[in-house]
Image (tube, helix red, strand yellow):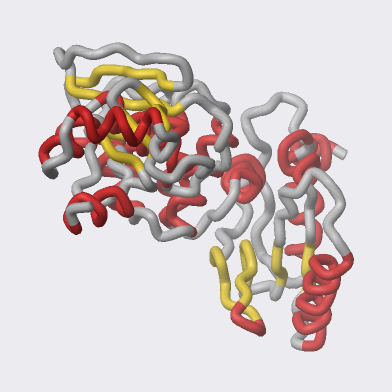
Length: 316
């Protein structure tokens, strides 16, 4: 086999198109012989697998792009899976092409057209896909704010894109659903918030009740970081966004970190997701009492909710 064709096939997860094979010097007869003999199998019309039995998401994704033809790129959930923002290997492969391009999807492949194809295509990633920043906002569309914050935070944690790149991508999407809320949440992600639970804490507990502003992702022993550290009163707030029970090892790490802090005079408060999401006013009232007991000269303010527990506490 032609060395260049062999290299291309290796880079395409063992796949080759009819046009690529012909351009490398194979004849129609040679292609048919390989298929009829079982050396190649047909994945899609005019797309062949040269390693029968091979499978996997990468193969499906590349096969979809080869079937649709250039220019085309992974989009939506498929781009999110390729960027490791989510794990959805069994979903249909989503492909985007330029507006006005002909072609039809088939079983296992969905296709959309976009006038923004060129500016949203990542120039180097393979399989070809939409940039990580634009993929984030494609995934945010139709999702809850909590899920959206989680995706934005994960993209930053994985260093797929910077907050500035996310801001530029959002600025280029004036019709993005809930754009204003995403812009606000992105500001918190840029400042160090790393989860939806932390975002809710900053928005609904700390800021809404005018508590002191914590230092986000403060360094701790063992190259770990704490969600919010309040240096003036030596209090750390670690928001636990986990809905289930963690294993012994994870709990041991948390306990060790708390003990290290206690030795240095720090108090660690670990509110749960339910407290942050469903009882933020009560949590704010508790933190207000803790902070003032440890020397804070201020006082929490009631939020916009008429039944805010901080208000009740003052009336009492």
